[in-house]
Image (cartoon, rainbow, N blue to C red):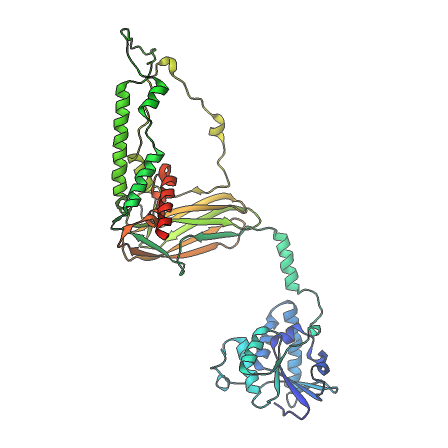
Length: 476
């Protein structure tokens, strides 16, 4: 590198200056250094490497790289490694900076594997032999690094930027976007993950909070109330046989008998007692599955076009597996079947024949909702489930439930969910780590709120409302 004469300034240029601004010989150096007679421009080695890499790209980057390659040849062919860009007012020369080894640079202050850090580190090393060197850069990161190192820097003026149209690549991309048109955007989300994007499965409680037991029993009673005896008599009348009671199929019984009313009251009392027994051991019924949790996969189309033939797949790693989401609720529905209020016996004169609705039978299935394809059977060791939707419209979203279980109290695994569409080349993938934490306390409102899908649908909303009220009280 040549020595610096008096009344001269030295500028080390950043890569961005060679790409975005006018050629070095066309820069109005007089405006930048009015008193200088000589302007030395030094190109750090890392800047030269980056410009060489741009030769394999397209558009303006390739054009700038070819321009710089021509200048590089002139520098390499000159006797002293210096090329004169302008003879006077001021004289401007350009040269390459020294070839530094990593040991020559300040690795403690700069991350030498990073391009911007490497460039500024080279300029700091150049400043050891040229104390008046100034970094000429426009990007913010090199300027922040220079400021941190105490290195003088200056920005090029905005009017020095090249005046040209958009890059060819940008034009090509814009044209392709217009040809492709509107596109769907599929997104996936799983609720209740922690700050590590992990889903924790807490199960096997030691008991149940008494308030939750009471809430479940009350929710059932509210959803399946007993019809009072007086109401039934008022509605249908009370059967009282006379002396001429002909029991023929054509005869219509005038009202309910006392035996019907008594039978209904006994059956309802048994239903209430069963509901209470189920409420007392509800946590044990849930725990029969093992360590289990219902997970809602939220699938959305946030694009500006409907996604066609959407396939959502969920896969879980061992030792986890999937079970039918209605495994528990289906069993409880059969046990918690409330008795129907009695009605008078109907003769042939009171029979009616339900009509056949051809419109409902011939209606086509909706194409804009998900249909469960392969929900596992009870006892299956299934680790893969999927759903399909013919047309997921823009702005629509669905909650797709899965029931994940394991028998191991310290299990760890991974839930991977993918969403794809016939009009999208790239799938959307969501990975959620799973981890089991055995419970040591009793099951409270939060426990049952996470497992509402185990509760028969007829009682679900009433139970949810009571649990949320309890949860709010606990939070106060």
